[in-house]
Length: 108
Image (cartoon, rainbow, N blue to C red; front, side, top):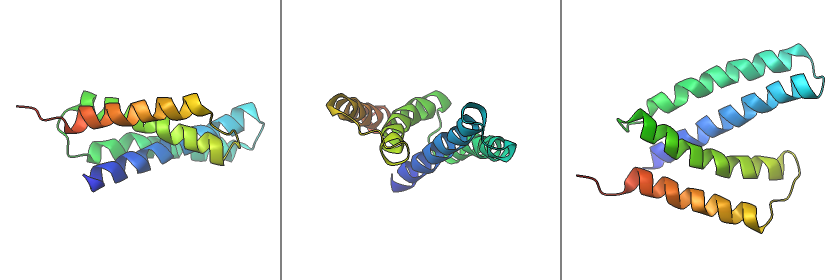
Protein backbone atom coordinates (compact mmCIF):
# COMPACT_ATOMS: atom_id res chain seq x y z
CA UNK A 1 0.00 0.00 0.00
CA UNK A 2 2.83 2.43 0.79
CA UNK A 3 4.41 1.77 -2.61
CA UNK A 4 1.10 2.57 -4.33
CA UNK A 5 0.78 5.83 -2.38
CA UNK A 6 4.40 6.70 -3.20
CA UNK A 7 3.80 6.14 -6.94
CA UNK A 8 0.68 8.31 -6.84
CA UNK A 9 2.67 11.03 -5.08
CA UNK A 10 5.55 10.91 -7.59
CA UNK A 11 3.13 10.84 -10.54
CA UNK A 12 1.30 13.86 -9.12
CA UNK A 13 4.47 15.84 -8.67
CA UNK A 14 5.52 14.99 -12.23
CA UNK A 15 2.16 16.01 -13.70
CA UNK A 16 1.81 19.21 -11.71
CA UNK A 17 5.49 20.16 -12.00
CA UNK A 18 5.63 19.45 -15.73
CA UNK A 19 2.40 21.29 -16.36
CA UNK A 20 3.59 24.19 -14.24
CA UNK A 21 6.78 24.53 -16.31
CA UNK A 22 4.74 24.54 -19.53
CA UNK A 23 2.41 27.12 -17.94
CA UNK A 24 5.36 29.35 -17.06
CA UNK A 25 6.74 29.08 -20.59
CA UNK A 26 3.45 29.82 -22.38
CA UNK A 27 1.70 32.13 -19.92
CA UNK A 28 4.54 33.95 -18.20
CA UNK A 29 7.05 34.25 -21.06
CA UNK A 30 9.73 32.02 -19.58
CA UNK A 31 12.40 30.57 -21.92
CA UNK A 32 11.50 27.67 -24.19
CA UNK A 33 13.60 25.26 -22.15
CA UNK A 34 10.91 25.53 -19.44
CA UNK A 35 8.43 24.12 -21.93
CA UNK A 36 10.79 21.41 -23.14
CA UNK A 37 11.65 20.32 -19.60
CA UNK A 38 7.98 20.44 -18.64
CA UNK A 39 7.10 18.27 -21.64
CA UNK A 40 9.74 15.70 -20.73
CA UNK A 41 8.49 15.59 -17.15
CA UNK A 42 4.93 15.10 -18.43
CA UNK A 43 6.13 12.11 -20.49
CA UNK A 44 7.64 10.70 -17.29
CA UNK A 45 4.28 11.28 -15.59
CA UNK A 46 2.66 9.11 -18.26
CA UNK A 47 5.00 6.25 -17.43
CA UNK A 48 4.90 6.33 -13.61
CA UNK A 49 1.29 5.13 -13.12
CA UNK A 50 2.01 2.03 -15.21
CA UNK A 51 4.26 0.87 -12.35
CA UNK A 52 1.20 0.43 -10.10
CA UNK A 53 0.35 -3.16 -9.21
CA UNK A 54 -3.40 -2.61 -9.63
CA UNK A 55 -4.60 -4.48 -12.74
CA UNK A 56 -7.33 -2.04 -13.79
CA UNK A 57 -6.20 1.03 -15.77
CA UNK A 58 -9.42 2.98 -15.26
CA UNK A 59 -9.48 2.41 -11.52
CA UNK A 60 -5.83 3.43 -11.13
CA UNK A 61 -6.31 6.64 -13.08
CA UNK A 62 -9.57 7.49 -11.35
CA UNK A 63 -7.96 7.02 -7.95
CA UNK A 64 -4.92 8.99 -9.09
CA UNK A 65 -7.28 11.86 -10.01
CA UNK A 66 -8.20 12.18 -6.36
CA UNK A 67 -4.56 12.24 -5.32
CA UNK A 68 -3.89 14.85 -8.00
CA UNK A 69 -6.55 17.14 -6.50
CA UNK A 70 -4.90 16.96 -3.09
CA UNK A 71 -1.43 17.59 -4.48
CA UNK A 72 -2.70 20.49 -6.58
CA UNK A 73 -4.13 22.17 -3.46
CA UNK A 74 -0.77 21.85 -1.73
CA UNK A 75 1.11 23.01 -4.85
CA UNK A 76 -1.07 26.11 -5.03
CA UNK A 77 -0.44 26.77 -1.36
CA UNK A 78 3.33 26.22 -1.33
CA UNK A 79 4.39 27.27 -4.84
CA UNK A 80 1.76 29.82 -5.93
CA UNK A 81 1.28 31.11 -2.37
CA UNK A 82 -2.54 30.85 -2.58
CA UNK A 83 -3.83 29.76 0.82
CA UNK A 84 -6.53 27.07 0.51
CA UNK A 85 -9.82 27.88 2.17
CA UNK A 86 -12.13 25.59 4.13
CA UNK A 87 -13.87 24.37 0.99
CA UNK A 88 -10.56 23.45 -0.65
CA UNK A 89 -9.73 21.27 2.37
CA UNK A 90 -13.20 19.72 2.48
CA UNK A 91 -12.97 18.88 -1.21
CA UNK A 92 -9.50 17.38 -0.74
CA UNK A 93 -10.77 15.25 2.16
CA UNK A 94 -13.65 13.99 0.02
CA UNK A 95 -11.09 13.01 -2.63
CA UNK A 96 -8.99 11.09 -0.09
CA UNK A 97 -12.06 9.17 1.02
CA UNK A 98 -13.04 8.47 -2.58
CA UNK A 99 -9.56 7.23 -3.49
CA UNK A 100 -9.53 4.95 -0.44
CA UNK A 101 -12.89 3.45 -1.34
CA UNK A 102 -11.91 2.89 -4.97
CA UNK A 103 -8.58 1.24 -4.27
CA UNK A 104 -9.01 -0.67 -1.04
CA UNK A 105 -12.69 -1.60 -0.83
CA UNK A 106 -13.15 -5.37 -0.51
CA UNK A 107 -14.06 -6.85 -3.88
CA UNK A 108 -14.86 -10.42 -4.81
